[in-house]
Length: 324
Image (cartoon, rainbow, N blue to C red):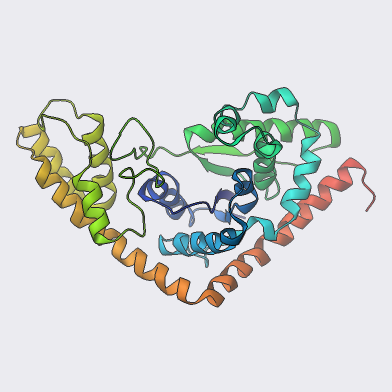
């Protein structure tokens, strides 16, 4: 049996190029090397209290975009987290094997609590994340540097449970995403965000919006400084991802030779981002016009994932002595 890989993405807001390069691109590259389980993390999104009338639609939109970007439902299970309630039930079992001190030490809780308030969902978010991966006996979990702490907690929870009730859970390993983080076009000191005007290139942006965002992106006063400024380095990161290898090396040589012009770099980037997103947007549009097909794909993924989740939950309950 192939090793299992598990990862999820929240259906909140419009996805942007940073989301693709930071996570989804890696999913696409890894899906054929693992038995892959990808899910729309709608339970997780509740910590930010999304509007109820839009959450379901955003879940469908996120699923459509994942498929458009290359997640293949034929070689991986793509499903919605809340449609497999075993995730939530296992979370309660695991909650008894983690301490309040461990949860309080989570860096992301401290950061998010400042923005969204100290609701219990934010505090216990990492336990649900642990359930998400432990319920499928995940061997590998692709994460960014900011999620490593959560995965280490999942390993600690598995260890604590196993010490008490016998070996039920496999300790998952982090598959660190080495992709360079794509920063805000208008402020390369911050992460790309679609909620900040001028910061991001949305995956559904029009050609004009893409052009304006790139033309207004931050560079510096000297295109041939020996060291790339953060803003220019960010443009090169995007160029490497969406352009041909030949094009990327060409602009690297121009910089090295002292003949780089920002206008030329930006024009190339505009053309290549538009060329990259064109087919993605077309596939996305087709999927969103056929909601029935999209729901069938998600149901197909649920049918693959849920029996595995049910079996693992039953094993955990039995190990704890709960009445079958």
